[in-house]
Length: 249
View (cartoon, rainbow, N blue to C red):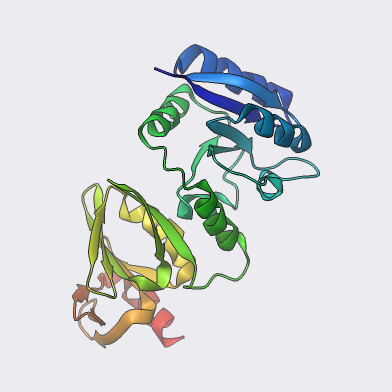
């Protein structure tokens, strides 16, 4: 089996060496062909080595990891972002369906990321970068897209097309405004973290709704909402007060 060619880009030498050592010792399918502490050097190395994946630190002096990607003419490799803390961009990274690792990087998290990489080489990095850039902008609109992993690969979906999402154990069922549905192996909490800034609200443990598609609210203990597709969804009693303030505002 051909090894995965990797480049590690991190301005902190200790972090770079630590990740290289862990990849060498615990991820036998990965071969580190080069490392770089400066984004300018990384661009040259990427163009020369044509890696399968880069491990890219988000925060670097002078040029961030995101800015570095903009400087590249071709992006035909996978990206796993690394960050020393729960960076403001993590939600945008999730929306674009990129993988990321929080420092200090655990062996287990690293192995799982490499395993996912082995299973899914989607060759859609450029589209994912476009979604990432859009999500990082201050102005978030429902015209933005979300990248969703499916059994066939990645599906890029305008957020405005999502009516509501229903939880079913470790799966989530997405309902669209064209009556289509899609079941994916992602927790509702993950969708909640990504979509709340886009006018979504979790009215119940098992339901996340797009507030733009509420047709009617029916009073009751917690009450119910009727969505544009006619679906009736219970509002949890503990959520009622906050929810009413949101739709009234």
